[in-house]
Length: 165
Image: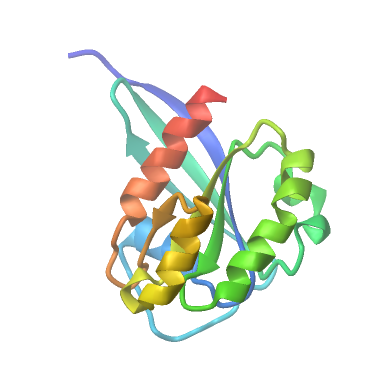
């Protein structure tokens, strides 16, 4: 039996308040969900490994507090990031607008960072909002931190993307 190579990847989880960033991270790292909203102050860091074909990717996940604009994120939070999950709330279209407003400045700061845009709270989605998002053709993944829908898959997809950039 051959041993798999292990590589580390720093992942950022970003978005405006109450979109479910911490809930996604907690669902992925601990398989837990809480309905109680406790805002993150600064940054919370968690780790989890994912096993891909021939290697293990140790993800170091930086859950960054409410970001009104990507321009105000401290550079030391961004430094060395390989991937980013930009989260919006499927039940609040204005959070998607905020994400889209700042994505270009984020890409300028971290041009070689793999990015996935994630619509969270799929368990609560209104069909009219889903149609609006699909019409724009920008949604990468629907997730639900509450049910766990697509959470593992989303982080695995991001881990794979970081190997390509």
